[in-house]
Each structure stands twice: as structure tokens, then as C-alpha cells.
Image (cartoon, rainbow, N blue to C red; front, top):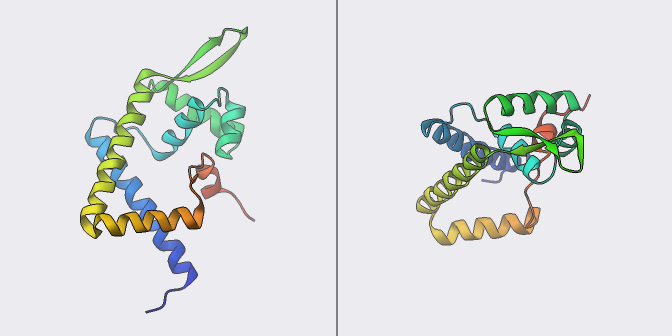
Length: 156
């Protein structure tokens, strides 16, 4: 049976969604019921240098206001903090807290476990082939922090 290009896109999105949903469920089971996928993207962007709402908004491809709301949630939950910039005492910089890094570490561990589940379902060789094909198709550096904004952008 031949599939359409749209079917391929939906299958790939379905694979992503399945992994993310399962990881979110497992994080909740481990006590992190308040973590959402966008929080992971935001914390990774902050750890990579997006140290204010404007920079985070650019990294996530969302408005400064949307980034500020995400920051407020992450601060309230203890995943990020605002610290005084050592070079400019008037400026406050965002930093991922130890708790935030623990959530990221737990998430990575969970994704490794989910990958192992997929390996058991289709076999190590087939999973390695799938990953190699995806690298060929989308490139080796497939991590994009702008996914939340890209998924929700208004094209109209």
C-alpha cells in the first residue's frame, strides 16, 4: 500500500507525539505533574543562553509576552530563577535551577527508556536504520528550540 506525503508527515508527527506524551506521563508519575513539553524547550533555551524574555521569545519563536508567561510559570514552580547579572547589577538574568536541571535529566532518562521500548518492539537493527534514515532526511542536528512557536504560528 502506497502512502501519501501527508501520511508520512502525520506518521512522523505521531511518533513524536507518542514519545512526548509517554515522557510527560512518566514525568508526572515521578512527581513532576506540572511539567509540559514547552517547559523542556524553554529550560533548554535558557540553559543555552536565552537569559531574558526577549531572548527566550526569539529562541522559541513566540512573543515576548508568551515567553514572559512561560518564565513566570517556570519561576513559580522553581525550575528557573532570576539572578543579578554580575556585569550589570540593574539586569536580572534567567538561569535554570538545580530542580530544573533535574527535570531535564529525568526527561532524558525517560526518553532513553522509551527508545529502548521501541527497540524491543521493532528490533535494534530496524531502529538504527530508522534513526539513520531520519538523519539522512532531516540532518544530524534536529534539535530545534523554536518548535513551540512553529507549531502554533499563525499562517493566516
